Image 1 (cartoon, rainbow, N blue to C red):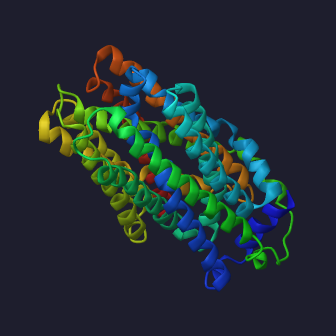
Image 2 (image 1 turned 90 degrees about the horizontal axis):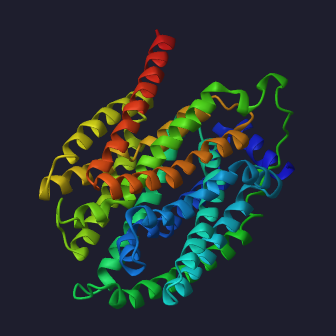
Length: 420
């Protein structure tokens, strides 16, 4: 456990001074780069879901098993937190990127041999890398700077990941000819892109693993034992509540991503072509990234809890429109949701982690378990879509945001009470 404890306690003990040093800045920029590049990889399941649905002849619920496979590894977050404590944060990030590469390459034989199970395993490996990446990266971003700027830095890091996510649909739109309508004609382009992406990820993993000794100054400080009064993160109601709302908000977010193209291509809703929906998916990721980038600036000036509360109200209004809209208005509503909901996870994560004290690694593991919502809720919405229709299934997301609105209102009220 010593490597990670040394890293995080050292970071926390010297936050203000280290944030101005070259080593600290290099480490923060390294993490930002990883968020950016891996954002492209971990978004592929939502980019090609309609093609997978057609290729493997799936229903909406069966289609969502891809999302389930990618996010179910978050069940093992506490175990990964222990691994990170033993191996260290930077080394764990290198392993995470290597798993991204391995999972990406495994998708190729799965697609070429028409074995859905192999595809699911590939996304499961990508999801394991994603889990390790989140558990290691988020507390490092939060620690590399003043505590009151943690929410802003997390929004920026996750915004860079969202910018990376723009590249996935944009690249497919560029390389796949508009005339390639059926999946058989698209498949060579998809597998070729996966091959190149896996190679680049493998090269980054090797580079990051070689950089793990570049930041030894982060561990060369004295540290004390955690306070006996610190307790356990599992006994902290604020962290437990935060894990629950993160479970819900990430589940709804994953559903919005996963059903985006299905929603636009549905002849009863918007009736867009596959090529057009793919281009709009690029715009959706751009809206998502813009939301987080704006939050990185805005949350330095207004309370993150207030910002969260306002965006939740906006999300509920937009979903109400989405439930009844057709054609272009429906497309505008679902695009606008990308901007609105983008801030929910990093803001909730930062607000909850403030109470973690010396247990940031354990609390990060607990909060990252919330990504299990991205495995469970899209499958539930897929089942609803099979039974009541895709458009009505968005009632589930509206119910989730209504519950989180109550939680955010309580946080905002408590902060105003403490300030007053």
